[in-house]
Length: 120
Length: 162
Image (cartoon, rainbow over all chains, first blue to last red):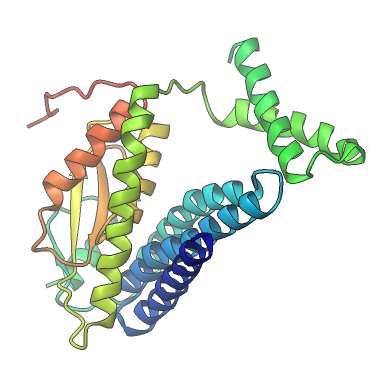
């Protein structure tokens, strides 16, 4: 039974990790590309880590706390790095596909102004 | 920060070190100064935070389910031959107070379906969305309420300047 759960978790994890990379490849601009690795890959690595927690908790005496920490740090750091990359891309005025629509009134700073002009 | 708060953080960092080194006694030669430095850094960088236990209990299943859906959602879009997206940028006016609650919400939003926070300022959270046909305004409000409960806060319902 445990083997089946572990196999399922590892497969699901591998699938999402792969799909995150496919998203990185297929989506058309920098901001959209960030969505794939941030969400799908984090989820995939999370599933693999859960499999690891279960495996070591059931096959050895102790509960495996390393993976719990790794999972926690993964979920804390992934969105922070994505956020900083998006911010850096805005600052560097990275190209957006032209159909990106802004639903906000951008008023003040210069880089934000450019950003809304570029988005039709 | 109070003395008990500082002691608590020191103990938490010590616990972290203890887990990471699997209780190796010799490692404390490096670990003890690092733990004290980490506690000092955290006291300088992060003011005391109050958490609500019921908020945490409510937040975890919500977050896990939504981030699971977030992964599935971006996976479907990436694998679909036509890559169905209509990207957009939304601004969400903060109801949360400045500091950790806002940063926490910005990070949460990035892991939820179709949204990625790209910037936060004094008044707004800027969010890049994959499909602007979704109802992100109410979605973000729901997330904000969950985060407020997590920190034991009440959102003031009056919207400043509107």
